[in-house]
Length: 136
Image (cartoon, rainbow, N blue to C red; front, top):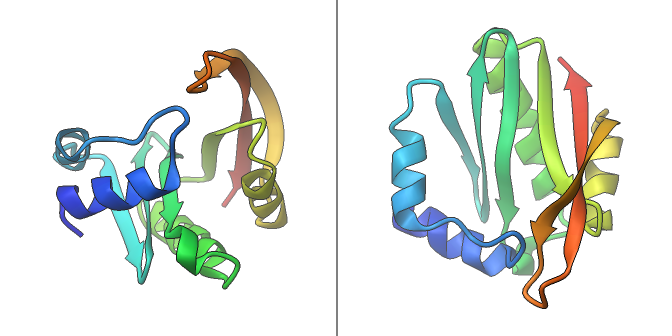
């Protein structure tokens, strides 16, 4: 997927915190530790450094959800993180995103912390980020 395609799909999936732009995706992808996993209707982008991986963002087209694509992306991401010698994956998710939290928990992620008032919603309200970790 091109940075423009990534940005278009990301915009269909996220308003909070805000969708990444094509330029932001291009900048991220230029990093030596960054990797992109893609499947039909979705992608996961992350980085692996010093034995740890971070899932920066994951997106599945809203019209293709509830069909196992998110789970498939997490499996693909974990396999690539292991290939890059990561021993654990970390992520942050809006505490209001119950569907994503449930998916991550089903995939073996556990809550390890909270970042207070981390995400800003379009109405100005702030919500916490849940920090999660999964061993590989």
